[in-house]
Length: 208
Image (cartoon, rainbow, N blue to C red; front, side, top):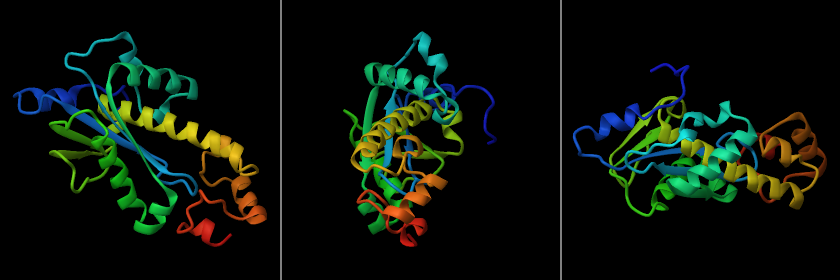
């Protein structure tokens, strides 16, 4: 399915809930998969039944929102929805690989919910050993409201962590690049070497 130009909706969730077999639908998404420093983060979000609120119209793929919009929405999602969060460390990423680490973060985020959902919508990838039936949704953060909400919470939570790391590990501009490779980040690696939160299995870090 091609990415939607519209905001994400409850359409996928409604389809699964129609026959009553899957009343509790969760969406999960990750942030930080392509970063060379810091953890990979994942969130799982379940909206309460028959959820209605004015702010829901603003929920979108986190990449299409400003930092200020994400912060405001993350606060509301955490306040009014069921949310699970998870980080998987750079050392685990180095040990098992980024795809298994991403899947682990997603499973842990679902495990962090107060209950096991009846069905799980997963952004863009299969999720082996999910705790309930699941479906990968390509461009899910632009189609499913639950996945989009998860993308926002994961992004805001990981960004806050990288702001803290900017203070701990100065010179790498983690405040602005959030651990992704930029020319400034590359120069810092060459000059200062990697930090404990860098992913040593990733080529730019290995070669520094």
